[in-house]
Image 1 (cartoon, rainbow, N blue to C red):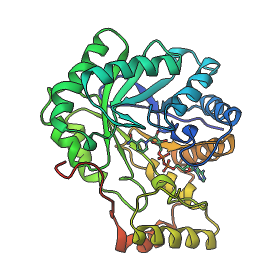
Image 2 (cartoon, rainbow, N blue to C red):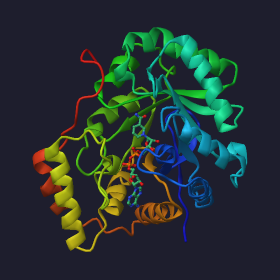
Image 3 (cartoon, protein in one colour):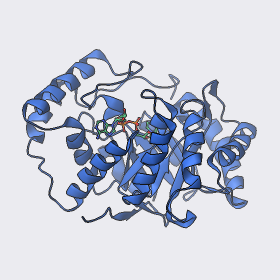
Length: 319
Ligand code: NAD
């Protein structure tokens, strides 16, 4: 079996697997996951060529970081062969992007992850904070952590795409290394595409998260907290059903669709079982070796046409 290729992440010099491991499910965000299964999933991913793992102190109130940290103790890779991203500023008790909190937060994450450095630290869902505070206070605090070697690269994450341009237009080039966008490059929403030329011009690495629209594009359906409007949830149900009738699994199709975009360095999919890791790696390898059959996309596209790029509000009104 061929293996997953590695791709440049912007100007970081990091080479990431096109398929990456989203660890929010390890915080029981999508239902309970046994710790042994969670750890085995991380190890299986590493064994099959996934070298990029993303978490946050917010996921499961630090549980995701703790479980990932346990898995990293025995991961079958040397430290310089895997890349860990975590986040700061969003916690189960709310948002705090102050220099003091994010500085302390990185130390706490390092301890939970059993690491001496975090490869990428990202300001988590910045649309919920003051973007000017992110620029003037949070990023400079993270730059200090970069200088002392606690983090290697800095990123920002969030749902509304305009927040990325607001921040990137106001910081010196090279200050922000990566951007993590979610739910905007998947079967039902490709809004990220329009921002790609700008992001490339800024030299930032592009991380696409949630290719299954946080569970909407799965046969099991989304979690009860999913914020999508009813019209979008209904279209997803229809698309799941259509794929089933055609003998296709919508999750495989959705992942392969996202992985096809060559401008996106890596796609983070949330995984909570060894079986899902195997399925998703297989789907990714099919895309890389051009063995995937995406012929059904046109029909699925018709189902999504009335709700194409339909999203939901996130963050402060002024952002
Ligand atoms: P996702 O679209 O990746 O969907 C995850 C869900 O799909 C989980 O329930 C998972 O069990 C299920 N799934 C995975 N593979 C499957 C398969 N083959 N068949 C059926 N179901 C399958 O959503 P996500 O987990 O929210 O996003 C991926 C990752 O991206 C997160 O774990 C997180 O690391 C990151 N992320 C970050 C932000 C942010 O920074 N604001 C937001 C969203 C996601």
